[in-house]
Image 1 (cartoon, rainbow, N blue to C red):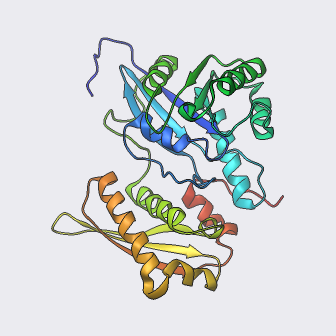
Image 2 (cartoon, rainbow, N blue to C red; image 1 turned 45 degrees about the vertical axis):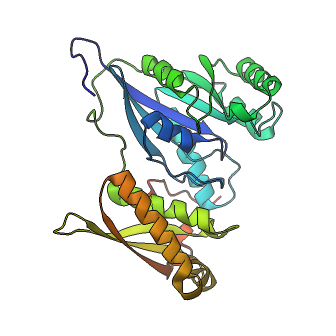
Image 3 (cartoon, rainbow, N blue to C red; image 1 turned 90 degrees about the vertical axis):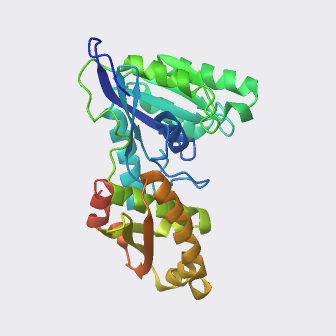
Length: 307
């Protein structure tokens, strides 16, 4: 998109925060106009801060999709929650995303997040998501309770999945950005390397294919990225698990499960990155990878000390 250079340009960061499964990643993809964050039906899928970038008029908005805010139990949980609040503190505006379908006004997690935002310094926007699946009375109650507790500048009711109301939200946030030069090239849609995005897409397929707690015990790293003469790319990734028994589940009988995961990931990688890909997946055991500082660095998380 080209812009009128005679007009004042704006650029800034908007943090998307909320409880797990509120729809932050789905909303980010809608706001940007393409897939830059993984989306599953499981909570706590997003582990690090992912930046999606969009142009709205003469404003460049850098959306920061943060991990869900919840009560942390493990070291990785603490790092994820710290990343979420850190993203909010560093932003020019923060949008609180609320799952209006499943959240009641008296919900403990909802109340806790509102309490944490009462002394916030940046402008705040309330976004009630999944409004097409929530009764109107609850929407009115959620909006009233939230605005009584926190001075939200604006309240929006949207469906991140269908896109309803998202354009108005984007326009409003664009106007809230501070004046200044653009932070990224105008055609860039994510501050995420191809290797990391490819690993994130494979991790999404793990969450969708595996059950119960096993997806949370896995991580994916892109070990090799080799362009070929025909323009395609050979991508080698390692799926790390914590125990030998988990390796067999990820592989599946005769390698069927990991093959299905790889095929689904390859298709999405090709679509997201606009390349032809040859994806090779390997499953390895790395005990206590969730306590390895190097893994946190690769996810863009600070390594927390013990509780």
